[in-house]
Image (cartoon, rainbow, N blue to C red):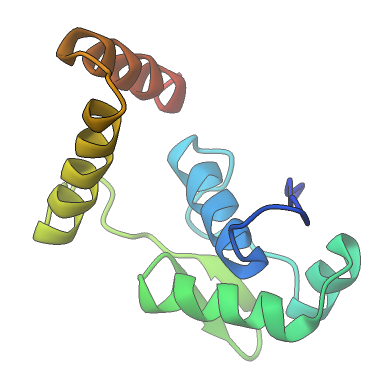
Length: 124
């Protein structure tokens, strides 16, 4: 698994790890049942403290994206693909992002075009 971690980013490393796994699952690079590297292995591969990776894995587990088993390690879970549930948190986060774009002068058409491009990117 190749992760792109930006050590100079304002986004915490554990959040970057979490986000990269989410993107890989969304793009079907990682599929249910696929194993993730061990905490120690991933930490060594990207040059971070194992506690950082552990925190990312804990987030992913809490979100139901991975399951952790002592015998098999961390694996991508079958998170109910096809069972589309948009909750209030999703709506709130998207509303905030759209509001920030509008606040910076983006038009409805620009935001729509950008969203559609991102949707196409994720579903390719």
